[in-house]
Image 1 (cartoon, rainbow, N blue to C red):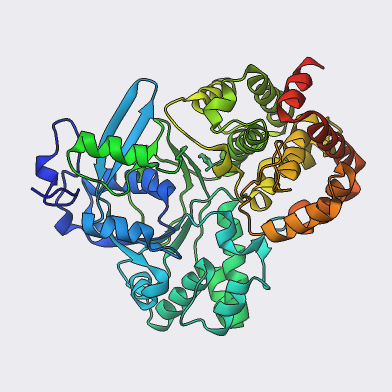
Image 2: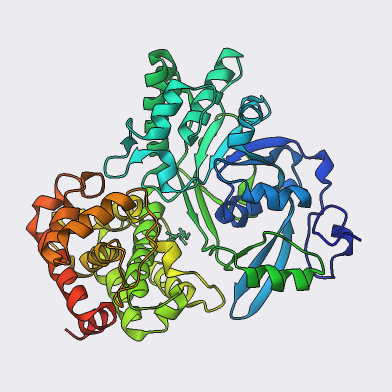
Length: 492
Ligand code: CS2
């Protein structure tokens, strides 16, 4: 018996561990996925694994656009990996088989483009994170000065970026008379389908105006709302899961019981019956997206910056502090909920109650540091859109602006004890420079950061109803620290 999870070891797994009941040799590739992170493997790949049980046309070829790590882990495992679902009630393990092959784009560029241009590929899905779209987060348009975009426009045959790969593959298909695939983004961007369409159309137009018109008219980009909390896998996870399987899995993924996928039903070349696996197909995703991005992700980022500064390692640790629970409940109820248009049939009160429980799940070690990453790309859709809607209604934004101020304090790169913070963000160097120049003055720092228009646009920096509370909170964060600021906030 093999000591590694793979096709050979499947038959010897302990009882009770579900694994693919379908014959993986009969599966053909219908989907190419860009960005094979833990989220994809705990979300879309699981829905697709369910579908493959009755329809073998939708196997996944998954690519990582940068690092070979996932390839190195999954290639010796025939693409198989464990999905661990954890809650206070315990852990269930299941082996997922929907990923037939992994490609590392930088070292197999043609291989990936061939898979994307193959007529059997009918959908290209993406989880490349917010920054992977190479767009300007405040306006949602292509950042034409982005180094990867500059590169890809000059060398389109050997792209680096997700937009570059997609446009080059579409160009090849068009030349060969193969209809375009549907582009299905599964990232937490606002109006994600429309955003990816705008970015791709502009990119294609810069390659050739005719190709731009083709992308605009012929390529379908449905919007989606995706939801499942998937913290980075730790070594303890690997060890625990290996012991339970009696074989090693180099890269299992660990997640919560909750999962949701809402998709606009606009697929030009057909699609898997994901609804049989629990996905919801709707005409308009926007109400679901607002509900999720503003309530879940808005709270998550607020908890991440404040929790990290207060010294809490995980979201669950942060939520064990009643002052933070009060803050998030207030944020959701008082400041976010009034901005939402409810999805049909949604029960907002129970949705919010469930969110609080999900954040508290002690079985998930979701690090505040992980969520704090890439704030420059996340703030606009998580907090600032809500701020704009509130200001338009003349309504207060006290809690929303506390999250923004905590982000400002965080990106200085120095924590409350004077230790360094490993700030990961495409703008990290610029943020650090602005913070250094502000020299510890809350007001100078806030003013300098308001000047980043990719984040704040042209309107918010000129609106004192926004800038004043942010600056006041930031002053408090410097003076009293995050823990006390949050505690006193509730008591005011
Ligand atoms: C998190 C999300 O890392 C983050 O920024 O807020 O990944 C979050 O866990 C998911 O969107 C939940 O669906």
